[in-house]
Amino acid sequence: MAEKRIGMTFDAVMRDLRARKFAPIYLLMGEEPYYIDRIADYIAENVLNETERDFNQTVVFGSDTTAAQVADMARRFPMMAEHQVVIVKEAQNLKNLEPITAYAEKQPTSTTVLVLCHKNGVLDRRKKVNSSLIAHVEKNGVLFESKKMDERSLPTFIIDYLKGKKAAIDHKASQMIADHIGADLSRLTSELDKVLISLPEDARTVTPEIVEREIGVSKDFNAFELKAAIVNRNVFKANQIMKYFDKNPKAGSVYSFLPLLFNYFQNLMLAYYAPNRNNENSVAQHLGLKSGWAARDYVTGLRNYSGMKTMQIISKLREIDAKSKGIENPNTDAGELMKELIFFILH
Image 1 (cartoon, one colour):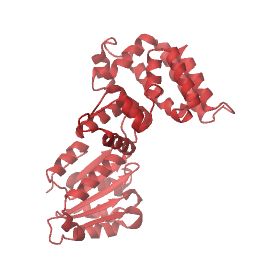
Image 2 (cartoon, rainbow, N blue to C red):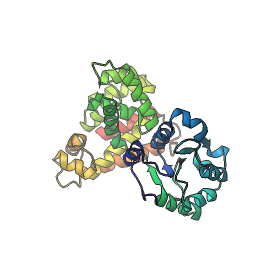
Image 3 (spheres, one colour):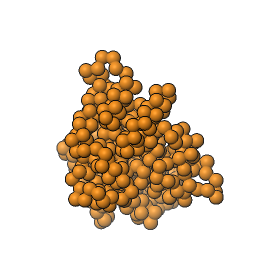
Image 4 (cartoon, rainbow, N blue to C red):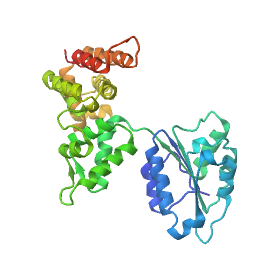
C-alpha cells in the first residue's frame, strides 16, 4: 500500500520527486498556480525519458476531456517503460469527478502517475464526491494545497529563488521588486529570470540600480521608498515621491499602494502587542517574520505612530479604498485620493 501523504509541502513533494519516489495520484489544488505548475512540469520532464514519453505520457485539459476518460487513461499500463504519466491541466473544469474518485478509491495503478492540476481554488469538501476524492488521495497518493503567498514573505521568496540560481540580492532591491510586482509568483519569477540573464558571471548580485534598469522601477521613487518615507515620517521625501508619481502615473497609483500600506499598518497594530516592542527579534517573532531585520520598519513605526494614530490610519485606508472603487466618491481621481491619504498619515 502506498505511504499516506497528507498536506505535503512543496519542498517535501519535490524532495520525493527528485528521489524518484512517485505516487500513483497527485491532487494539486489551490489559489497559487506557480507551485502547481512547478510540480506538474517536473513530473512531465523527469518521470520518463524522451523516448518513453511518446507512448507513455498524456497531457489533457479539463475542458476538453471527461473524468471517465481520465480514469480510463490512468488504468492503462505503460509500453516498454516503468511508468506512464497522465497530467490533467485545468482540472477544475472537469464536470463530474465520480469516475476519478472511484479510481482513487480502489488501489490506483502503481505504474501510473496521475496528476490533477486544480487551479483557482480548492475542491469543495462539502460535496461528497470531492470529500471522498480528497480522502482517497490522502490515503493512496499526494495531496498538495498551493496557497497564495503572504506579501510579507515575498522578499524572502525572492532571496531564496535567486540563491537557488547562485545569485544574491540586497534587501532594498528585493523589497522594490516585491512591492512593484506583488504576489503573482509566475510573473515575479519571470522578472527575476530576466534580471538573472543580465548579470555577468563575475558579479551575481542584484542591486537597486539593476532592478531600475531591468524591471523599470525607479530606485529613488517607488513603493519601497514611499513606504520607507512613511515609516520614518519623512514628509519631504514622501511629497517628493508623490510629485514624481503625478508626473509618471505608470510608476505608481493608489490601487497598488493601498494593499502595501494597509498590510504595513495592520501589522504595526499587531506589533503593539509584542512582549518587547523595542526588540527587533521579539517583534519579528510576534509577527511571524523570519528575521529581526524584517521587523525594523515596525520597530521604527512604533516610535513614530501611536496606537490611536495607527487605528485612525487603518480606518482612513478603508475609507480611501472604498472611494477608489467609487463608493461615496462622485469625482475625486486616484491621484487626489492618494495625496489625501498620505497627508492624513503624515500629519
